[in-house]
Image (cartoon, rainbow, N blue to C red; front, side):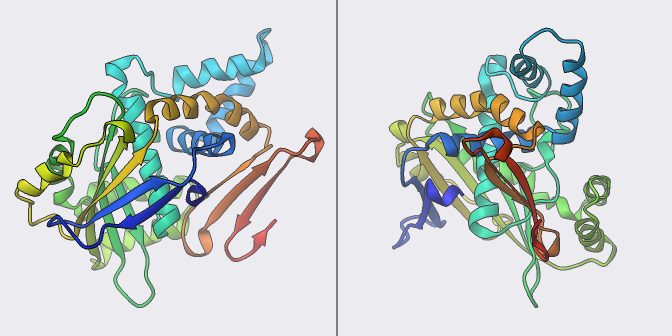
Length: 318
C-alpha cells in the first residue's frame, strides 16, 4: 500500500561512511492513503477490540452523536495530544508508525508486539527500542533489525542524525533480544494475543540460544521543505559506534509533513468507526509464515455492500 505513495532508492555511489536510502513521495497522499495511515496509527496505539467494546458501552445511554462520542474517546484514551510536551509524542508516534509500516511492507519484516499500546500514558514514549523487527529467512539465521526514528516537522535540527545515532548507542546496542525479561514480556503478550507460533519462536531465542544477524537502522522522517544535507554531513564527522553493526540511515522526505500528520490523526475517528462496524476500506497485515493476517475493508456506494475480509496466508480470503 505504501508503495503507491513512497519509493526508496539507495544512494549510489556512496558518499558517506554509512549507507543512505532516500525515501521520497511518488504522489501526494490522497484520502485513501490518509485512511490507511489513520488505520496504522489506530492499530499501533490501541487495541481494536477494546476500542469496540468501550465504544459500545459509551453508546448505550448516550444522546450525543456516535462519531462525536468515538472522537472524544480516542482523544481521551488512545491518541496522543498534540499540545502536550510540544507534540513530541503526537509527532514521534506518527514517525514510528510510518517507519514500522515501511519495514513491514518494503522489507517483509515482522514485529513481535504493538509496543506503543503498552505505554503507561498515551502521551508518553514507550520504553525499549523504537523499532525491533525480525525477519525469518529460509535455511539462514534470522535477521533482527533495531531502529531509532527521529521525526522533524518544523524547527530544523542539524544534529538530529547524530542524536539518533547516540540514542541507538545508549539503548539498542545492548541488544534487547538477549534480555530474558524483555523476551518473557514479549512472549506473554504474544500468547495473550493467541499468536502462538510467534510466541514459540521468541521463546526459542532465549531457551535455545538461537543465533541471529543484526542491523541498526536510523530513520529520519523529515519535512522536505526544511531538509539540509548538513544533517548527514555532521553524522559523517561523528565517530560511529562499532557495536552498531550494519548501521544505515533512511531519509524519508515528505512535503508538508506536519499537515499530513494532522490529517492522519483527524481521519482516525472515521476509520475507527468503520473498524467497529466491520466496514473496512484499506489493508493491514501482521505476522509471518502461516500466521500472516491481513485485513481489508472497502466502502461501496451502497452501505449494505460494505464487508470485511480476513485472510490467512495458507487459506486465502475467507
